[in-house]
Image (cartoon, rainbow, N blue to C red):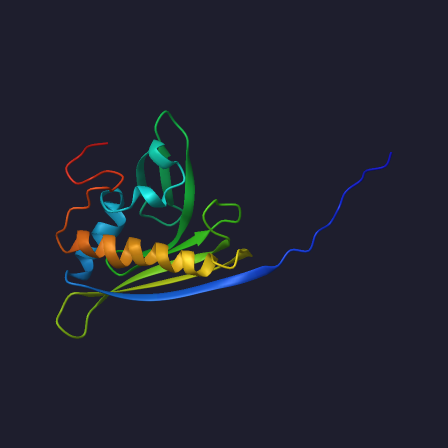
Length: 171
């Protein structure tokens, strides 16, 4: 029996993103907004299930998942919690095969800001996979909107109208 197949050359690239976002709220409050209320600020534009996404949660323990739930059942895993220090940091691994990224990791650190109080949120995202030329800019755009605009605004008391679950709504 003969089995035919073909091979194609694949370019693997890496993406490394480092962002720092000053937020006018305590590190514990920003951490709580990130970990416990992510659906109240996460954009419907940045989900895998589109309009069928009805929730996104983080299970706040090692091995916990950053998980998107879809109406009628189903969903997807975005990442897995690798380490967590409540109020200070959370690190995630990104499994190979997820829809939004190549295999890798991202870490979010919540530090007390040295000047003016508040929090200096530090995001690191490192991954590798087959990428289009604009992948890096897409990750930068996504994290800037999600962390630098939406989480910042929410933690500082803003309401995010187009969130997966806008403030005041129940799951």
